[in-house]
Structures are given as C-alpha cells and as structure tokens.
Image (cartoon, rainbow, N blue to C red):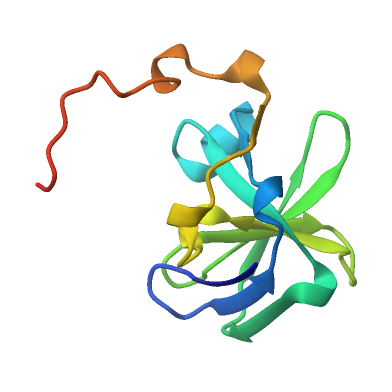
Length: 134
C-alpha cells in the first residue's frame, strides 16, 4: 500500500510503500515518553519504498536498556515525531508513525507489544463519555 505522510506544520512530507498487516502498537515506557501519550502506533517501510519529499527532520538518538540505538526523527519546526530507524548511514527500514499518515484510518494495529508496560485504563476507552467536537 502506498501512503503519504507529513508533520503537523507540513514542513516534512514523505511517501512510502508499506504492508498494512505489519502495523503495530507499542506500550513500552520509551514510546510513552517519546509520544507524550500512552502508546505508539507505527508501521515499517523498507528503505527502497521510502521517499522523503520535503524538509529535513531533526534526529534524537535513543539508547535502549539493551544497548540498541535508534534514531528518532521529528520536525524541527513543529516537533511532530515522523519516523525512527537504525543509527546508520543507510538504514534498511523506517518505522513510520501512523498518526502522520493520510491513510491512518485504514491502518489499525495488528499486534501489540510491551503489554507489561501498558496502562490498564488505556486498553479500552469505549466506556468514556465522548463528544464529537470541542
């Protein structure tokens, strides 16, 4: 599936070819902190199918408890997290942030990981009163 994405202000734009069956939801504490939310939804895009169309993301290198390093890329203007990849000159793939994709409504997660860090209240919000707009 071909997808198009951008940051909130539109400075960073890109397109990619992804497999919708590989969308995942991560509950780890790093994803909670790096999103400012309770989980992150992402989808991998192979290098060959990823094209940065405009802008130059700023990068933050995160070292995990395992020692693995990941480059988290975000818009230097609006701060929107856009993707993460291996810390190398030639990453094999990009982990795209689904919330930045125009096609996000078509990309429900197919798996959840790091569930031991999941906040219980965030696993089913269907009972919380809702408003269509504010």
